[in-house]
Amino acid sequence: MAYCHSHKNIIPYWLLLLLLLVVTSVSKPITTHQKIPAVIVFGDSSVDSGNNNFIPTIARSNFKPYGRDFLGGFPTGRFCNGRLPSDFISEGVGLKPIVPAYLDPAYNISDFAYGVCFASAGTGYDNATSDVLGVIPLWKEVEYYKEYQKKLRGYIGDEKAEVIISEALYLVSIGTNDFLENYYALPKRQKEFSKVSEYEDFLIGLAWNFVKELYFLGARKISLAGVPPMGCLPLQRATNILEDHACAEDKNSVAREFNMKLITLVANLNKFFPGLQIVYSDAYTVFLDIITSPSKYGFEEAEVGCCGTGTFEMSFLCNKHNPFTCPDANKYVFWDAFHPSQKTAQIISHTLLKTSLAKFV
Image (cartoon, rainbow, N blue to C red; front, side, top):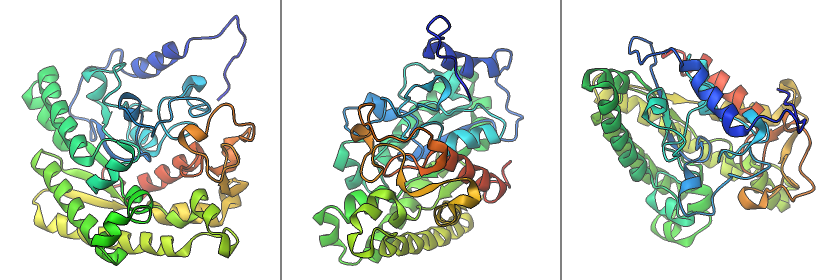
């Protein structure tokens, strides 16, 4: 999408965002007969649309060049050059093209009625993971969701609110930080769980409790995303010196093992909770295929990110003063050393819409 950069014709970014949010619903009253009336998001930086902007943490991305390919070319707090998978999925099910962050004061319940994001970059299933960078723990995301429910009922009434709550699509994308920022980076959990498989089981127990709580709060349609091929993230490649910066297969093996346990968890949850429709969304397979066969998807670079040198920069290290940032992120699988580019996010989300999420659309 091209933007006019003439100083005489510049449109303020806040006005562009306002148009994006409002135009689709100017004459659109709240209805509850749409198949998916809202998209509700929990998780980490893979789906955080800006909540971390409003908490005291260094895990932020509300500065350039983040967001340079977003509408208006401005940073929103998304760890990406543009939109996230949750944004594309919202658009794909017929809702708005972005899912707003719950803590962003620029939005209110009239926006959140169609979609809302509680995710926080740097968090995990494990509360100890959120402590690493001082971000929002998963239990607090759920508390914000409870608060949201009260606001929704006050806005459209109990009956319509209950329909939205039960018919909404809940997107959950979380888990990578539990391994890369917590278990492998700090000693505490390794002392408690000598084998990573034991830590995986601990996380699965936390995931069960999380879904159970959502269920008793009224959620019925849930997508539980697996973790990506963690060993192929540019930051992991950069430290894999002994194997000439190849994907770290030990990390990918853990990701596959954990994802298999998530698949079993999903099957058990569906059996245990009447009326629950929870699906496992396999982002690992398509993401790995993009990384190993980038030209098939129109990419030129899959080993490093676009921002900076692409090997270690993310958050404040990925900034407008870095002279090495690439001119065209669409050629890169990764935006920074940890996060996929908007083009990758779009491919992954469209794949999920045709596979695990197809039953909801």
